[in-house]
Length: 188
Ligand SMILES: [Zn+2]
Image (cartoon, rainbow, N blue to C red; front, side):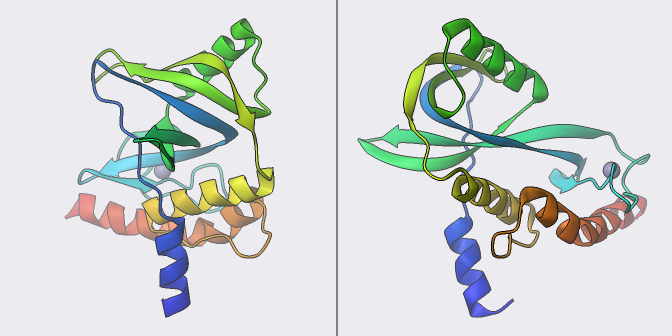
């Protein structure tokens, strides 16, 4: 990895927002995505799954896979706004969509949302509070989302104006190699 790539990756990195059991916080959800990915847990690490692509996943059949989504969230801490990455389940996201319809808040702008989790095993609850600010360029936000997720999973960043689909296709062989390494660990 050259120096420029290291710099790009450090700039792309976003902290994962965690909501603890019985915790609650209010954030502005950036409704770009979610970026949905299948993954396996190996040695307490999440490794991406290539099921559904042309490249078979060596972890499938050895360990359970689950689908996780990622969105961006703006968190205000000490009057400073900070962009963070939020991981969610399909159930949490459908609750969020339902809540936005109920509140009459469109998802073409930021959405002030109350996040809560009743217990560690329960999915994240996302309740819409009100409409937030207008979104910056959607393609720019999409690239930020994809790149933050790419850093999280240790896979290549987007190149140029690549779409999410183009990026997925390009990084699939890379993801498959990581899955193969994970599968070898399970065998050992
Ligand atoms: Zn898999």
